[in-house]
Image 1 (cartoon, rainbow, N blue to C red):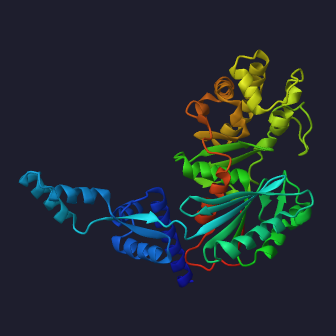
Image 2 (image 1 turned 30 degrees about the horizontal axis):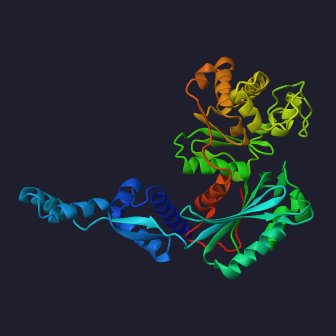
Image 3 (image 1 turned 45 degrees about the vertical axis):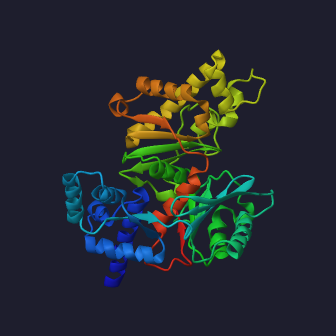
Length: 419
């Protein structure tokens, strides 16, 4: 038990140091010690271990020390300035070397399952995207088989098994780790064991790797948290795609991990007399605000309606489009007001296709919240669109897997994670 605890503590400290370098490229060991609270001796030993394993590298002396050196040696400096600079150098002692992440040594492979394709995202753990491809999927193709075939080709040509830290499967589905089922999915799992068998099939197909199955909205929310510098401990990420999903951070922790089974935001009922939903309720947010429902709102329009075309029409002053967006913003604000009363987030970020409605929709949502919500809880609320691209959830999956599941001090082969 003592050895296990020591390993856990060591892994936690290694992860802490690695993430500090991830967020502060060029940081010195001394600054790492100050930032993490670990002793300089411990930092030095652990950084050496990370460097030996190929996760970080010593990038040489920091710019500040080099500048001091340049000043001290500059011939046209006054002797007093040169003496001061040399004295500062002596007081500084050993020059502080900066630390960088190693690129090209380790990867996390992410497969995103979509209706007619598999998105393949090979991400370096420094955050760089090494490779991104799309695999076409026929109606009778197995997602798992397509992924296995692609992986075999990768291992045969580019990346070794040792370099591949893990594989993530990002699904547009609610995940239940207790019952080991995937439900409320927008893709067909018919040829992959169905919702009740897909996890077992994945485990059987990739036995030699660390595997994580994650929800797409949760991964997009994690990317927002990591890559846009979200500092709010309580924030909500709402994503409009084939459905409407939400991920909530409560006190800096992703509620329900990357499963999305703790939130059913798309099934908030905002119109009890509205159209019936597959969930059994009526007037759900998804039934009223999904992109494919737009033609029902503007039947007189004889053009294909999308969020983007509606937003553009409103931008150029089309009265009917502007009123439709006002109605949608009001309906959406009803769901947001309920969410705010439940968890009181400081920040709400809207991602996915809804951003294509443009600034008019966002302003109308803000106005509706001001007029029809509990002011004490919404007066300080920030609401904005996501600034990340459509591939953000794959970068989020990579970082989530590394932060949440990867262990520096354990053998990761044959491990399997849900959420």
